[in-house]
Each structure stands twice: as C-alpha cells, then as structure tokens.
Image 1: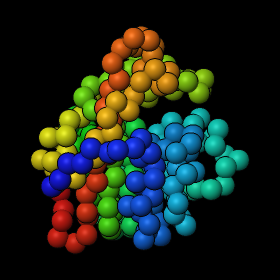
Image 2: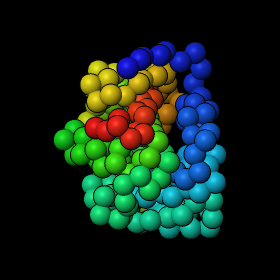
Image 3: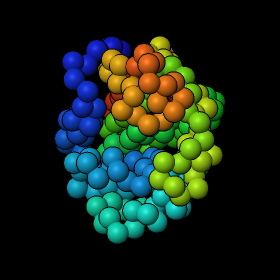
Length: 197
C-alpha cells in the first residue's frame, strides 16, 4: 500500500481519474448530489438515508436516486454490480464498527474500486444541517480516520494537506477563525477479484 501527499486540492479530479474506465458508479451518502453531479461516469446512482436530501435534488436528472440506509446496502445491491463505489464525506458520520461493516459491503458491491474521502482524524462537527432540511443528526461526525486505518484495510491513501479550513462553514463553527487547517484523506482500494476485504 502506498501513501501520497497531494500537491493540489482537487480531490474530484483524482476521483474522476480513478473512475475513468468505469461505466457505473454508486455514491453512498450522496446527500443532495452536489458532488455526484461532478463525477464523470455514464451511469450514476446515489443512495442516501435521508429522503429530504434526495427530494431536494429531484429536479437533477444526472443520477438515479435511492432512499436507503448504508448499513444494509448488501440487501439491495448484488456483488460486483457497480464498477466503482464512492463514499465522499460520509464514513466519518458512522461509528467506527458500523463504518467498517459498510466498507466490507461496498467492497463486495464494487467490481473494480472503492473510493473514500474523509477528514483526517476526528473532525468535531456539530449537528447543523447547512441545507436547512432537518437532517442535523445525519451531519454529526461519529468517527475519525487516520492513514493507518486505511492501510490496514488494504487501501492506498492520498493526503490532502490542510484541506479543511475557514472556507468550510462547519470547520469555522467548531474551530473558529484562527484554527489550524485539518488534512483530508482520499483512500482507494482495488476490488477486482482476489482483492477482497
């Protein structure tokens, strides 16, 4: 496994590069679809447990929307049913043991690759829904992730140094205007046959 320090802050460009040969992607915890819109893949499916987020994105026909919980994905998706599965700013919203089970499930669902983007360490995020849709409890962070966590699971990791700063409203609310920025991690794992959890 390898660790890279990114010399730029565009994690979406890297995700699109990873998914360049993928036809179908599943985005877990897609929210209103703000990030999924920018993923370049012919078929995009977004899953979110909080229905009002999906309803807010209803006029956006760039992806298929499914209201379902991440903890039970293997009940509705078969093994190897998507080329790639992404979890962008999602995994930190679960307790660690639950998140590990979600990762196990998506690694079965992905035929090629799982991609995770998350703050490095524990990012204290209060229960505030910046969309104003009543999803405060879904916004609270419940776990923190380090490079070593992903390396132990067989992932490669890119560190986006000082990614979260005062430009992020959630960061400013908790840490204030003079706090040191927090790194972000982009972890990816090849889920081709023989590379399971």
